[in-house]
Picture (cartoon, rainbow, N blue to C red):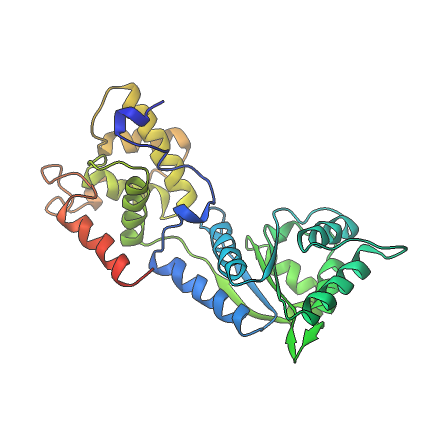
Length: 304
Protein backbone atom coordinates (compact mmCIF):
# COMPACT_ATOMS: atom_id res chain seq x y z
CA UNK A 1 0.00 0.00 0.00
CA UNK A 2 2.75 2.47 0.95
CA UNK A 3 5.70 0.97 -0.96
CA UNK A 4 5.64 3.44 -3.85
CA UNK A 5 5.26 6.39 -1.47
CA UNK A 6 8.46 5.46 0.36
CA UNK A 7 10.33 4.16 -2.70
CA UNK A 8 10.45 0.60 -1.36
CA UNK A 9 10.35 -2.66 -3.27
CA UNK A 10 9.45 -4.75 -0.22
CA UNK A 11 8.15 -4.01 3.27
CA UNK A 12 11.08 -2.87 5.38
CA UNK A 13 9.73 -4.08 8.70
CA UNK A 14 8.05 -7.35 7.82
CA UNK A 15 8.23 -9.75 10.77
CA UNK A 16 9.51 -12.51 8.50
CA UNK A 17 12.35 -14.64 9.87
CA UNK A 18 13.96 -15.06 6.43
CA UNK A 19 17.77 -15.27 6.78
CA UNK A 20 18.31 -12.79 3.95
CA UNK A 21 16.90 -9.94 6.06
CA UNK A 22 18.87 -10.85 9.20
CA UNK A 23 20.71 -7.78 10.52
CA UNK A 24 24.14 -8.73 11.93
CA UNK A 25 24.46 -6.35 14.89
CA UNK A 26 27.09 -7.08 17.53
CA UNK A 27 24.90 -8.69 20.20
CA UNK A 28 23.20 -10.98 17.67
CA UNK A 29 26.51 -12.01 16.17
CA UNK A 30 27.94 -12.77 19.62
CA UNK A 31 25.04 -15.13 20.32
CA UNK A 32 25.34 -16.69 16.85
CA UNK A 33 29.08 -17.22 17.31
CA UNK A 34 28.44 -19.14 20.54
CA UNK A 35 25.89 -21.32 18.76
CA UNK A 36 28.26 -22.00 15.88
CA UNK A 37 31.03 -22.94 18.29
CA UNK A 38 28.87 -25.30 20.36
CA UNK A 39 27.50 -27.08 17.30
CA UNK A 40 30.73 -27.28 15.31
CA UNK A 41 32.59 -28.66 18.35
CA UNK A 42 29.93 -31.32 18.88
CA UNK A 43 29.02 -30.14 22.38
CA UNK A 44 25.56 -31.67 21.99
CA UNK A 45 23.10 -29.04 23.09
CA UNK A 46 22.87 -25.27 23.43
CA UNK A 47 19.96 -23.25 24.83
CA UNK A 48 18.91 -19.76 23.69
CA UNK A 49 16.59 -17.85 25.98
CA UNK A 50 15.21 -14.34 26.28
CA UNK A 51 12.10 -12.21 26.22
CA UNK A 52 9.72 -12.36 23.23
CA UNK A 53 10.79 -10.44 20.15
CA UNK A 54 14.56 -10.27 20.70
CA UNK A 55 15.41 -12.44 17.68
CA UNK A 56 15.80 -16.00 18.93
CA UNK A 57 14.04 -17.47 15.89
CA UNK A 58 16.26 -15.49 13.52
CA UNK A 59 19.32 -16.94 15.22
CA UNK A 60 17.93 -20.47 14.89
CA UNK A 61 17.26 -19.90 11.20
CA UNK A 62 20.76 -18.55 10.63
CA UNK A 63 22.35 -21.53 12.40
CA UNK A 64 20.25 -24.00 10.37
CA UNK A 65 21.24 -22.21 7.17
CA UNK A 66 24.93 -22.22 8.09
CA UNK A 67 25.13 -25.91 8.88
CA UNK A 68 22.66 -26.92 6.19
CA UNK A 69 24.95 -25.28 3.63
CA UNK A 70 27.78 -27.36 5.09
CA UNK A 71 25.95 -30.59 4.34
CA UNK A 72 24.23 -31.21 7.66
CA UNK A 73 20.69 -32.57 7.75
CA UNK A 74 18.55 -29.98 9.56
CA UNK A 75 15.19 -30.06 11.29
CA UNK A 76 13.23 -27.14 12.72
CA UNK A 77 10.31 -27.51 15.13
CA UNK A 78 8.33 -24.30 15.56
CA UNK A 79 6.05 -25.60 18.31
CA UNK A 80 6.94 -28.63 20.45
CA UNK A 81 3.60 -28.81 22.23
CA UNK A 82 2.42 -32.02 20.52
CA UNK A 83 2.72 -35.56 21.84
CA UNK A 84 6.09 -37.28 21.95
CA UNK A 85 5.15 -39.51 19.01
CA UNK A 86 3.96 -36.54 16.94
CA UNK A 87 7.17 -34.66 17.62
CA UNK A 88 9.44 -37.60 16.78
CA UNK A 89 7.51 -38.31 13.59
CA UNK A 90 7.97 -34.66 12.66
CA UNK A 91 11.72 -34.82 13.24
CA UNK A 92 11.96 -38.15 11.42
CA UNK A 93 10.34 -36.76 8.28
CA UNK A 94 12.71 -33.79 8.28
CA UNK A 95 15.76 -36.07 8.22
CA UNK A 96 14.31 -38.22 5.43
CA UNK A 97 13.49 -41.18 7.65
CA UNK A 98 10.46 -43.45 7.85
CA UNK A 99 8.84 -45.88 10.24
CA UNK A 100 9.28 -49.53 9.28
CA UNK A 101 7.33 -52.47 10.64
CA UNK A 102 6.45 -52.22 14.29
CA UNK A 103 8.97 -49.49 15.12
CA UNK A 104 7.97 -46.65 17.38
CA UNK A 105 8.74 -43.15 16.05
CA UNK A 106 11.61 -42.88 18.54
CA UNK A 107 13.08 -46.23 17.45
CA UNK A 108 12.82 -45.21 13.80
CA UNK A 109 14.56 -41.92 14.54
CA UNK A 110 17.35 -43.68 16.44
CA UNK A 111 17.91 -45.98 13.45
CA UNK A 112 17.92 -43.04 11.04
CA UNK A 113 20.52 -41.22 13.12
CA UNK A 114 22.66 -44.36 13.15
CA UNK A 115 22.40 -44.47 9.34
CA UNK A 116 23.31 -40.81 8.96
CA UNK A 117 26.29 -41.26 11.28
CA UNK A 118 27.47 -44.33 9.36
CA UNK A 119 27.39 -42.24 6.19
CA UNK A 120 29.54 -39.56 7.84
CA UNK A 121 26.64 -37.15 8.16
CA UNK A 122 25.44 -34.96 11.00
CA UNK A 123 22.10 -33.57 12.10
CA UNK A 124 21.16 -30.21 13.63
CA UNK A 125 17.77 -30.07 15.35
CA UNK A 126 16.36 -26.67 16.37
CA UNK A 127 13.38 -26.52 18.74
CA UNK A 128 11.70 -23.12 19.05
CA UNK A 129 9.35 -21.98 21.83
CA UNK A 130 10.63 -24.85 23.96
CA UNK A 131 8.90 -23.42 27.03
CA UNK A 132 5.78 -24.98 25.45
CA UNK A 133 7.05 -28.53 25.95
CA UNK A 134 4.22 -30.17 27.88
CA UNK A 135 5.89 -33.52 28.55
CA UNK A 136 9.42 -33.05 29.86
CA UNK A 137 10.14 -36.75 29.29
CA UNK A 138 10.56 -35.69 25.66
CA UNK A 139 13.78 -33.97 26.73
CA UNK A 140 15.06 -37.18 28.32
CA UNK A 141 14.40 -38.98 25.02
CA UNK A 142 16.44 -36.29 23.26
CA UNK A 143 19.24 -36.87 25.77
CA UNK A 144 19.37 -40.52 24.71
CA UNK A 145 19.51 -39.46 21.06
CA UNK A 146 22.52 -37.31 21.88
CA UNK A 147 24.27 -40.52 22.96
CA UNK A 148 24.32 -41.73 19.35
CA UNK A 149 27.89 -40.94 18.36
CA UNK A 150 30.33 -41.45 15.54
CA UNK A 151 34.00 -41.24 16.41
CA UNK A 152 33.15 -39.94 19.88
CA UNK A 153 31.12 -37.02 18.47
CA UNK A 154 27.30 -36.82 18.65
CA UNK A 155 25.61 -37.42 15.31
CA UNK A 156 22.88 -34.96 16.32
CA UNK A 157 23.25 -31.55 17.95
CA UNK A 158 20.27 -29.73 19.42
CA UNK A 159 19.51 -26.02 19.80
CA UNK A 160 16.65 -25.25 22.16
CA UNK A 161 15.19 -21.75 22.17
CA UNK A 162 12.48 -20.22 24.29
CA UNK A 163 11.35 -17.49 26.61
CA UNK A 164 12.73 -17.40 30.13
CA UNK A 165 10.33 -20.18 31.12
CA UNK A 166 12.43 -22.62 29.12
CA UNK A 167 14.94 -22.62 31.97
CA UNK A 168 12.25 -24.00 34.26
CA UNK A 169 11.52 -26.75 31.74
CA UNK A 170 15.20 -27.66 31.68
CA UNK A 171 15.39 -27.76 35.47
CA UNK A 172 12.47 -30.23 35.45
CA UNK A 173 14.50 -32.50 33.17
CA UNK A 174 17.74 -32.44 35.14
CA UNK A 175 19.45 -35.26 33.25
CA UNK A 176 18.92 -33.43 29.96
CA UNK A 177 19.88 -30.12 31.55
CA UNK A 178 23.28 -31.62 32.36
CA UNK A 179 23.84 -32.09 28.62
CA UNK A 180 23.24 -28.41 27.82
CA UNK A 181 26.74 -27.14 27.14
CA UNK A 182 25.79 -23.47 26.84
CA UNK A 183 22.89 -21.28 27.88
CA UNK A 184 22.94 -18.09 25.84
CA UNK A 185 20.76 -15.14 26.80
CA UNK A 186 19.58 -13.13 23.78
CA UNK A 187 19.25 -9.48 24.76
CA UNK A 188 17.56 -6.44 23.18
CA UNK A 189 19.58 -4.10 20.97
CA UNK A 190 21.42 -1.16 22.45
CA UNK A 191 20.71 2.22 20.86
CA UNK A 192 23.48 1.95 18.25
CA UNK A 193 22.36 -1.54 17.28
CA UNK A 194 18.74 -0.39 17.05
CA UNK A 195 19.73 2.42 14.68
CA UNK A 196 21.82 0.04 12.57
CA UNK A 197 18.87 -2.37 12.49
CA UNK A 198 16.45 0.31 11.28
CA UNK A 199 18.93 1.55 8.66
CA UNK A 200 19.63 -1.94 7.36
CA UNK A 201 15.96 -2.86 7.09
CA UNK A 202 15.23 0.37 5.20
CA UNK A 203 18.17 -0.14 2.86
CA UNK A 204 17.27 -3.77 2.17
CA UNK A 205 13.74 -2.73 1.23
CA UNK A 206 15.16 -0.80 -1.72
CA UNK A 207 14.59 2.64 -0.19
CA UNK A 208 17.41 5.14 -0.77
CA UNK A 209 16.11 8.27 0.97
CA UNK A 210 15.62 9.48 4.50
CA UNK A 211 12.43 8.52 6.33
CA UNK A 212 12.92 8.93 10.09
CA UNK A 213 14.43 12.07 11.58
CA UNK A 214 17.18 11.50 14.09
CA UNK A 215 14.93 12.42 17.00
CA UNK A 216 12.35 9.95 15.70
CA UNK A 217 15.03 7.26 15.51
CA UNK A 218 15.97 7.89 19.14
CA UNK A 219 12.32 7.74 20.17
CA UNK A 220 11.92 4.41 18.35
CA UNK A 221 14.59 3.02 20.62
CA UNK A 222 13.12 4.61 23.76
CA UNK A 223 9.65 3.28 22.99
CA UNK A 224 10.72 -0.26 22.13
CA UNK A 225 13.64 -0.81 24.49
CA UNK A 226 15.59 -2.20 21.53
CA UNK A 227 13.33 -5.26 21.12
CA UNK A 228 13.41 -6.11 17.40
CA UNK A 229 9.82 -7.33 17.25
CA UNK A 230 8.58 -4.09 18.80
CA UNK A 231 10.74 -2.04 16.43
CA UNK A 232 9.14 -3.83 13.50
CA UNK A 233 5.61 -3.21 14.76
CA UNK A 234 6.28 0.43 15.60
CA UNK A 235 8.04 1.30 12.35
CA UNK A 236 5.48 -0.55 10.21
CA UNK A 237 2.57 1.35 11.74
CA UNK A 238 4.52 4.61 11.51
CA UNK A 239 5.09 4.07 7.78
CA UNK A 240 1.42 3.33 7.18
CA UNK A 241 0.26 6.30 9.28
CA UNK A 242 2.66 8.75 7.62
CA UNK A 243 1.61 7.50 4.18
CA UNK A 244 -2.06 7.96 5.07
CA UNK A 245 -1.37 11.49 6.30
CA UNK A 246 0.73 12.24 3.17
CA UNK A 247 3.90 12.90 5.17
CA UNK A 248 7.35 12.54 3.64
CA UNK A 249 9.24 12.43 6.94
CA UNK A 250 8.49 10.63 10.17
CA UNK A 251 9.09 12.86 13.17
CA UNK A 252 9.06 12.16 16.92
CA UNK A 253 5.47 13.32 17.42
CA UNK A 254 4.25 10.57 15.09
CA UNK A 255 6.41 7.93 16.77
CA UNK A 256 5.04 8.99 20.16
CA UNK A 257 1.46 8.70 18.89
CA UNK A 258 2.01 5.32 17.23
CA UNK A 259 3.84 3.93 20.28
CA UNK A 260 0.92 4.86 22.51
CA UNK A 261 -1.49 3.33 20.00
CA UNK A 262 0.44 0.05 20.16
CA UNK A 263 0.54 0.17 23.94
CA UNK A 264 4.31 0.37 24.10
CA UNK A 265 5.85 2.02 27.12
CA UNK A 266 5.36 5.80 27.14
CA UNK A 267 7.82 6.87 29.81
CA UNK A 268 10.07 8.44 27.20
CA UNK A 269 10.24 12.17 26.68
CA UNK A 270 11.94 14.75 24.53
CA UNK A 271 13.94 15.92 27.56
CA UNK A 272 15.98 12.68 27.31
CA UNK A 273 17.23 13.62 23.87
CA UNK A 274 20.28 15.71 23.11
CA UNK A 275 19.14 18.28 20.58
CA UNK A 276 22.67 19.00 19.45
CA UNK A 277 22.92 15.36 18.31
CA UNK A 278 19.32 14.36 17.53
CA UNK A 279 18.16 17.61 15.94
CA UNK A 280 15.42 17.88 13.34
CA UNK A 281 17.67 20.46 11.68
CA UNK A 282 20.10 17.66 10.81
CA UNK A 283 19.51 15.37 7.84
CA UNK A 284 17.06 12.52 8.44
CA UNK A 285 18.26 9.06 9.30
CA UNK A 286 19.04 7.57 5.90
CA UNK A 287 21.51 5.29 4.19
CA UNK A 288 23.03 8.25 2.30
CA UNK A 289 23.91 10.36 5.30
CA UNK A 290 27.55 10.36 6.40
CA UNK A 291 26.99 8.90 9.88
CA UNK A 292 24.78 6.15 8.55
CA UNK A 293 27.25 5.19 5.83
CA UNK A 294 29.85 4.76 8.57
CA UNK A 295 27.54 2.38 10.44
CA UNK A 296 26.93 0.22 7.41
CA UNK A 297 30.59 0.35 6.39
CA UNK A 298 31.65 -0.85 9.83
CA UNK A 299 29.31 -3.83 9.53
CA UNK A 300 30.73 -4.66 6.10
CA UNK A 301 34.34 -4.38 7.30
CA UNK A 302 33.66 -6.81 10.12
CA UNK A 303 32.10 -9.26 7.64
CA UNK A 304 29.02 -9.56 9.84
